Length: 97
Length: 278
Image 1: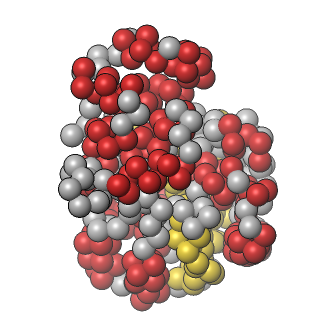
Image 2: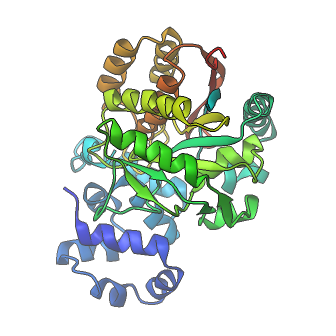
């Protein structure tokens, strides 16, 4: 299910270098500017790829974790871990083309 | 009257630009050879105008306003905004072709299509990596068609065939003697930001190539409509190939090269179609 405000945060980070700088300096303060739900805020603060993945377009998710400085191999490994037996459900592929 | 003189398709992927200098030499050579061959064929057909069919990677549009299809009808468009693109393709402005763009838009509306329009698009890596690697003359006017290939629900494959036929009709009804080429960008299979990220679905890619080679629209439509939901999300960009294919009359497909490109995360495909006889 798409989370509009999380998507908006990720989209804005893709378009606004100053926002990226602000986010790197103080994530929590930037998150406060958006109507981000508490559980989503926690997932952002924890760099929880698995929790965020079902909520946003996959391309925006990739860009976001580049902003966060997560190496591509680690990002991919965290995504792949979602396919492991017992892992939380994988994101709805159809919804995030 | 204008004339369709060349139809092409090529993959793209940000890593092609971001890591070009550090990519394994043999890999870079294969990509270079394929893009160069398209460049050679494009120059040989001496286009006055290039219609580029590409996705938008969240550059012009967001989910608060996300068109299925947008036609760029301005005299100018902005070059790529991504920092990794500015290093390799430092064009801040790309020429448009307002007259043909408006004609394409009007032809669409007259035929019960409802695209959005833009007088100034920003053309991201999806458009500009092929332009860069193919070596398209930066002075060549472009008419961009941006297709929602990224966020469901997307245009049906059936509709993309109709769009390709419409592009052909618009070219052939344009009153000036322009030589027009069409370039579809994206695909083949790749998986970005999802649990299968990095997967290149070679089975899909080969079947897809076979279906384009056979050409028959209903088979290709059925194949893609079913299989796109089962492979990586990047394969949805094949819509841009479908539009090129239908513009060519759904015949005359020629594969220039295909190879899985794990270094760039894409099933790298390059193709051209035979232009209609004069």
